Length: 430
Image: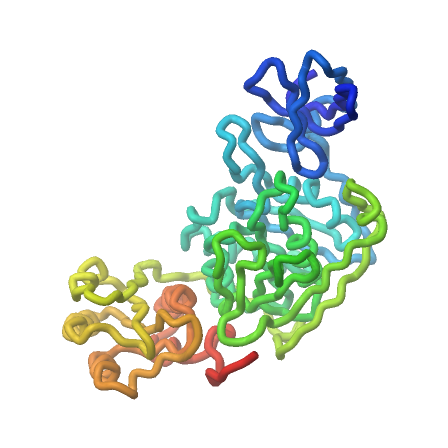
């Protein structure tokens, strides 16, 4: 009997079935139950039987069994692209921490609820936690998605860490014109936790990838309950909570749509995940979207990465701009309508004179930049600052990277809605 074996352990009070884990206490057997909880059993009072050997490689964090996903000609083909993150992570039993370990095939084994919803192709672009994401990986990801769609994928699901997902979704929105849905999804809580959101988010993402909306979207919990996922447009989403399952919100309007998640009777009646009962979940879109097949596939993956994002705070002097001297572009998070201290203006004017493109956004969650109301704003416009409309600062930074590499007139392109990042009007909504 070795760690990684599926075992049944009886201690006189009950029988516990699960995967045997390593234990620092020689007197205790530790078993991971299907619910996600671990249980410790006194070895001297327990009888243990090995039900299946080597079902899980503790050292690598990978399931040993092969994926049994079969092709069904009546189902669409969805490409699952893994970049890492919590949705594709497991516990590193050496350190006790969560680490990115799984490739796309492991996701299929870990989420058998995906069986029967589509045919799948798996591909790994990166195996990193999202704080390690870089623009170079965005380029690799855009190229991989392009290749998958060219090869006939009816939709693409990108498994991604949540911390920087909004940046990656924005990048793909600008780099790819797509005739099929591209859906980012992730997990706030890892698969070993009973409250994990990985299964529901993955299933909702696949349903969205089968839909008629040829958009770059983010599919995540719509609330703390396991009832629906919200579909956020990639350029309008923001992670607003560190740990809640419904951390993501669409800023400035309601989400693009919703996927209703309903558990089948077979799932509800069993602690194990059923794979033989699947229902097509209802998707409701609230706003207009690009329809499947309307847009020709086009890849424009060039990025100017010498772009910075600077946040203005009270008391911060113009020396805050020293590190961006000579940069190709800088996005400033200003106050309110898009302001900074007046002693920044001469420095900004000098940056623009030296060829740096400067875009102004707002630290406010909602609303629009307007530098025509107060003297400071008018001075900023005279200095050559480009108003960022109602773009999110992170989205504006990614867009500026793309615009500087692909457009001749950044001032025009930054104020032009290219991928739903700018709304026509800023109005209150319920």
